[in-house]
Image 1: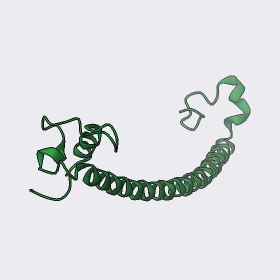
Image 2: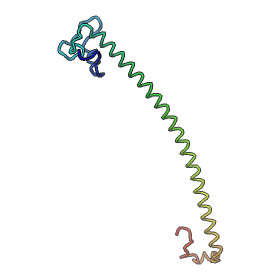
Image 3: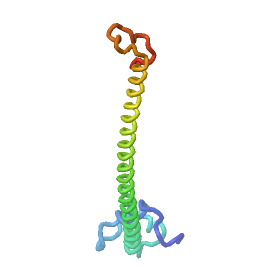
Image 4: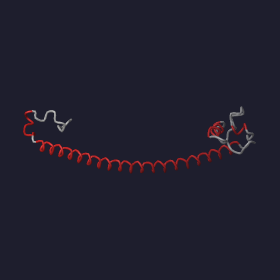
Length: 133
């Protein structure tokens, strides 16, 4: 015997599928069964069941660990989303304040120019402080 256990889930599944149940003889004498191929025809069911139980326990532990990691990731995403929304709110407020300062500065320049009273006569055309230029 090379080792005591099947090496992969596929080998365990093949071993379990080669026999119909606990009371029927093993169906595979052709070498499809990992256990028969490794010289365990007498104890193949017990060994296959033990291997299957070990595999199930291992996978259940992995699933639990992955679920814990998923929960932690979900919490982290929630915190990141909250931080993003807070930063977005702050940046929008800063942008609004900046736009208000820009308008106030432009109005101040127009007042200093003194020609704003004649804006309706195209006095501001060509002015570099005209909105949009």
